Image (cartoon, rainbow, N blue to C red; front, side, top):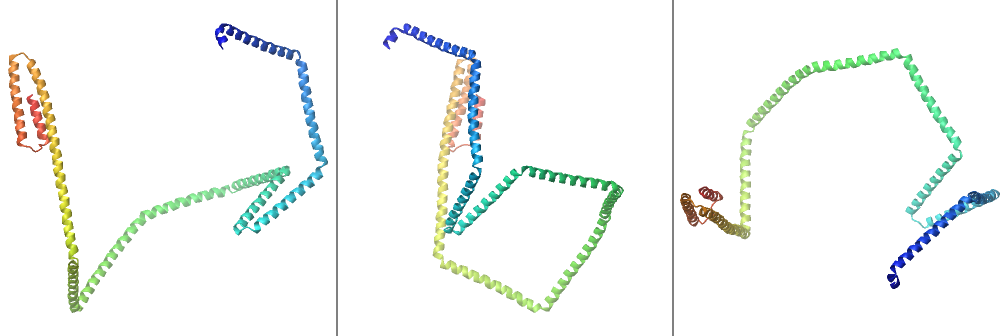
Length: 378
């Protein structure tokens, strides 16, 4: 490191030379490879084709060997596959039966449902395989069904059109008859609304008169019946009324006696309740008085602070005006200012005397009027 620091210029030159030599060598190698590839382009294409041919030949040999082996051992492989699948199914059935033998009823039902679902999927798969195996037949059958439906539809359309052409005069008559029936029904409804309303009004008026007469007759008959019964049972009615008054008075007396007895029994509790109510009312009244006193003291303190602030503001304004007045040199203006100053002092003294005479808080309106008066004089 010390040598590199001492010979820094030489080190930079050497490193630049090394990088240059490395870059030149890499460029020469790249150019040599490119030149060789250009010179041997036909040989390179032949070599690549030969490599691809060899690879394809080996792959085809391997595939042919597999195919011929499968063809030669086809029957053996099919028998082995069937035997293996059958053995696997038998083992699976034995295993399921062994598990279900010691399972509960709910687990058995779940297993039966899974077995049924599995069988349904197997049948669906077989149907799909059959469709794939017999794809051409299924396509032909579907096309034949579609063609048959289309032919039936076309025949039905042609038959309807032929019937319409054959019975077009009857259809026109039928349409006219329908229109005539609709118009006739509309006119009937209109006439019924026009004349049916008047008839309904007459019937309603007659029914109302008859109902009122019947109601009046029933009411008169009821009044007469009551009067006859009262005249017949005059003595009984007087006795019943006296008995009712006596029963009401007895009931009222019993209630008064019961209340008096209850009050006498609970006299101590009643006195305690009255004393407690008196104490509660007195406590509430004392709280209100204390609240008013404390609130009045706070209001007095706020009023005093407001007066001090207002006096400070007025004094400041007066000092400012005094300074302006003293700055004038005219004798006439000075005399007017002296007179104005005397009036202001008189107003201030009267304000202070009124505040000493009335220690209570004055309303904001009176204070505002005095402030406006002082400002007007100023």
